Image (cartoon, rainbow, N blue to C red; front, side):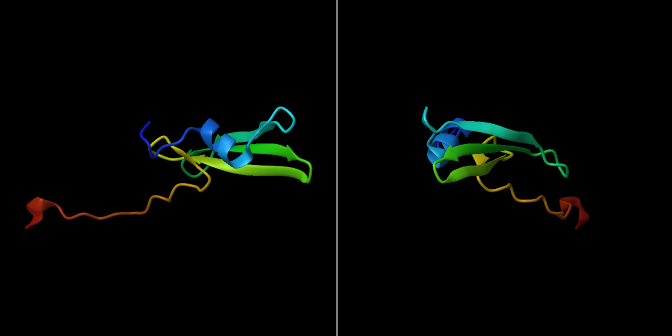
Length: 82
């Protein structure tokens, strides 16, 4: 894992700061239907109520709070076509 990639545990600690008094739990995990990308929903109990965040797995193996960009159709020229 290079310096640009963060583990899921590191992101959960960063965004939700779990403690023994305010633990977190995974409430949902799966792949998205369109292209089987992975996501995890983590929920934390807070004095003001519950807080939930989705974390998405990117193609490079990193986890982020935003989904990966959708693959778009691409064209390329064949060098032998000239």
